[in-house]
Image: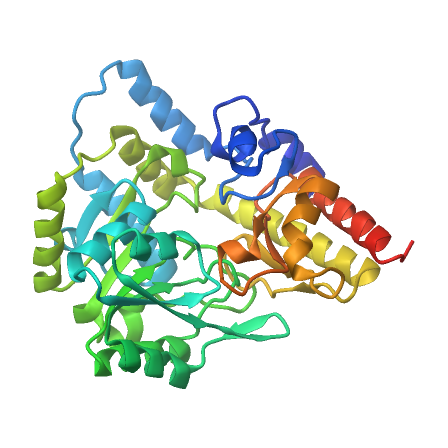
Length: 398
C-alpha cells in the first residue's frame, strides 16, 4: 500500500472547521499553535458509502423526528455477527448520544449515591468523571505495568471489591489507553470475581474493531456462551470504527430483562432522547459499505505505529511504546529521559504538541503520553521528530 498516496487522497485539513481536536487548543491547552495528537477521531474522510447516503438524505430537505428502521438493525447486527460473532435482537438494544453519556446513565441507573464503582487505571478519563460527577465512591485498581505490557492483579482487584462493597465495575475492552485486547481467560477471571460479589459490569467496547496482529477481541456478551449476560450492560458504537463521532449516535445493549427495565426506568426519568436521524443514516451506510475503507485505515494505523516505534527504538531506545494490540492510540513512557512531572510542560512548550498526558488517565500516570495514530503520517513524523530532537537536547545526546 502506498501510504503517502493514501494520505494525500484521503486525509483532509480540519483546522478551522469547528473541530474539538484542532479548534479548541486555546481553550484546552492554552495554545492554539500546537500540533494536535490527542482526541480519538481521525483526519481521514469517512467511507464514501456514508457520504453518499448522507448527501441523499440532505437532498430530501426534511429533518423531522426519526425512526429506527429494520434496515438499520439488519446492518448493525450483520456487522457484529460477522466481525465478533455477536447475536443481538432488537429488544436488547437502546440508542444513546454517545458512550460517555451512557457511562453516566449506567452509573446512575444501577447504583445509589455514595455506593462504590471500580475502574482499572490507567483508563479513559471520562470513567473517572462518570463516577465522581454522579456522587459515587470511586475505587481504582492500577494495572500492573510489565515493561509496557499491562495486566490485572486479580487478587488486588477482588480485595478492593470486598473492602469497598463495590456495586459496579466499568470495563474498558479493548483498554484505552494501554492498548490491551483482553484474552478470553482474562475476561472470564474478571467476570467470575464480579459474579462472586454481585458486581454488575458495564463493558465499554467502542474500540472493538481495532484489533491487530494475532489478537482477538472477545465481547463480554460471548464469554462462556453468554453466561454473564445477566450482569452485563454493553456499550458500543461505529463512531470510532468509521470516524463518525460527531453524528452523536451509539448503542446500549442489555440482554437481561430486569436490567433493561431498570435502564429504561432511569432514561424515562430524565427524558428519553430521540434517535439522531443523520447518525442512523451514516452508521447504517458505514456498516453496509465501509469494510474496505476500514481495512485501509487499519493498515495506515499499523504503518504509523511501526514508523514511530522504529524511530524511537533507533534514536531513543529507552522510550517504552506499549504493544499495539488494540485501539488506535499509542501509550508511550518517556520517563527514562525526563522527570515524569515535567512531561506535560515539555511536550507542549518544547515539542509543540497537544497530547493526552498520563495523569489524565491515572493518578500515577506522570511521564506518559497518548498519541493518536489514526491520522496523516506527516503528523506522526512531525510529532516523533520533535520528541526525539527535544529529548536529545534535554539529555545532552546530540
